[in-house]
Image (cartoon, rainbow over all chains, first blue to last red):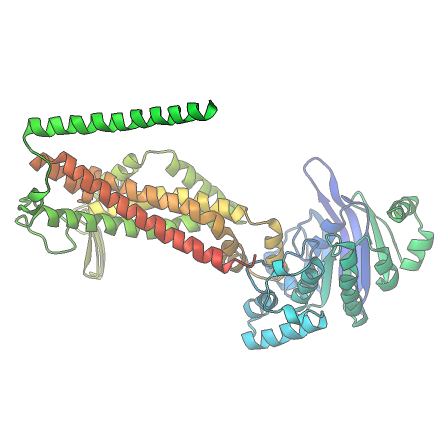
Length: 248
Length: 299
């Protein structure tokens, strides 16, 4: 089976010699869900942002959907990747001056050159999948955090991506709003979407992920299936982190 | 006690204020009587008896002062409106280049902004007039099939003739103002959060499309007030036309004062015309601002 994401020895240093990424290698196969965990500042956000070119790296090699990128950060290749990879952010980042439906149809119309009516039909279908089609004409600020994040997922799905990246999608939400977003993500995983998810949600990682990748100080500490990672993590550092999470 | 003190203070301020105005009016009256001119506007309808190099409407030296002033006002309006458009286009492009990803363009535009902002406008106008246009040869310098001609007489473009004076002023004002507008645009762009950039980039939108469709609409509320004050400055700076010999309202006023000695009346006319012009600019921008805010009421 063709792997969707292959990273080889990704390294990114900041000026003071600090390493945001330190020889990171990983592989995600089609239809699989990789959860990335780690303390804040461990480089997990930086890592998934390299997958669609929002972050550059200094050394190593990336292969996303068969498109190879290296440290030269070839804009044309990155543009090709972005058309096939969706991303959901911690702060939603919806466009506040556009209506919910306009947020979703923007990329299909202006990047894929689809007809407006066709993009709107598909946008409405995605919104109904997310259970928020009644909000189509509203603006982002009129929606709750959980609803906004579901719009963001629909927006990422509008380009019919082959890979979805989630950067702490529930960290900015009220606790009672987290599940509506996680449920939407669960359904996507069940439909066979390939996903890389940076999250602290242990329940989601246990139920949905195929692999858990644990990072600290820019390094991959371990990559294990969730049943092993959460009950019997290989590394002392991972166990320490999980103990800290449990206390919350 | 305290209230009494306040009333006393305000009363005192009123006396000083009206006292000062009284002194000014008194001075004025004494001087008008001394020169034997009196205060009236009837001279406006006498023949101006001076020629104007540039007149968008028919004008001869036998026309009245009032008509000459109106021609001056039209000339002012012509250079202000065209500089305003050119400065906005130029400033927006440079502002984009300054904030864009291309580091060479960023460096060039930063250099442009620094150079333009740190030299006096008068110097720049002189430069464009004496070096830029009068420095050209009097026979046609560049000719493209008689459609586009540049010489020290100005530019001729398919029948339309722009004088060197007008062009020097247009270029000088536009380039000077564009450097300030570029900084206003940059400030507005920087006021939009990084997340918005990441969101449009991750959707595969190009930098240009993202800037126009996502960033600029959100930057406008931060841009409009700064833009308004740059437009007002441009309108006021246009009076430097006199330095390059362009017949704007200020230059024509100056000639009339020299001929008639009607300084008070002329300055009142000048004051009112600039007040009206700037009120027009301010109100237009206010309407645009309100339209933007209205379209953003949901944010």
